Image (tube, rainbow, N blue to C red; front, side, top):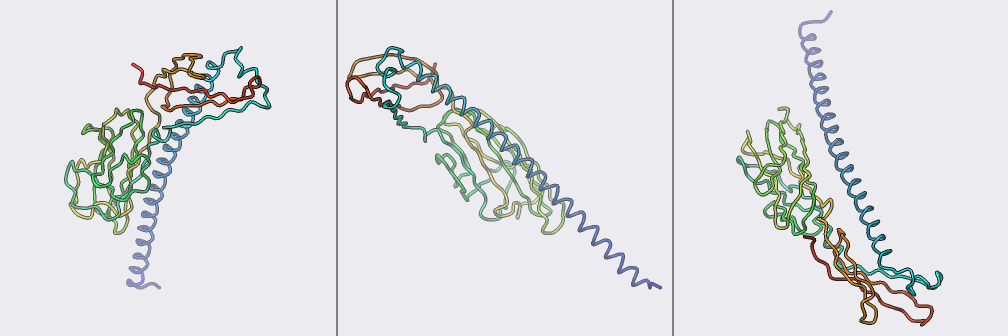
Length: 279
């Protein structure tokens, strides 16, 4: 026969188990949200690689245009022919960054920039960890991603902005359970011109201190593809123009073609250059 004290004890145990199950459901929901966000990022990266493959096809088509059918290059023995392509400036087109917060972020007001001070990766050095602002010098389409993990009892609405204009908003509200933090994320795909900036700022907060968990939030971005440039170039051999071409491309670099001439038994250097933006 159970006493009242035993019944109360068993009831307390059941309530604790119920609370644990609710907390586990919250954690599973957070993990699902994170997985969905990562899937979105991977899909964007896949599309970026697909665009790069198309750009490479464009370059190979351009090389076919450069080679006249009756040129010594095409008549050279396949065994002796060799080509060397030296590119300069491709690294300038690589832009990507990820930054997190090294300490708890608190004392945030409304419409205040969130500074992610710990840089994980900053290819191109376009992100500034002291200000939390990304400023581009490469015009093109970019992907930005923000993940915010709020402390218990904290509510936060934040937005990704472009030069002060709202792009997307994310809303984070912890369930009110001690040591249980809730994360929310969002992503924006936008076009940026040279000199334009993007950052994350608060919309409103309900707790002035202890707002974001240390190393639990992040701000990331990368260049999906550059603006289309127009190629205006010439191919020269021994200071004589062989062929002039004009073709669009997304890259900005100089290319050299070094081929072996079977008749003269000498190497010939062909130079492609002079790049300018279309329009």
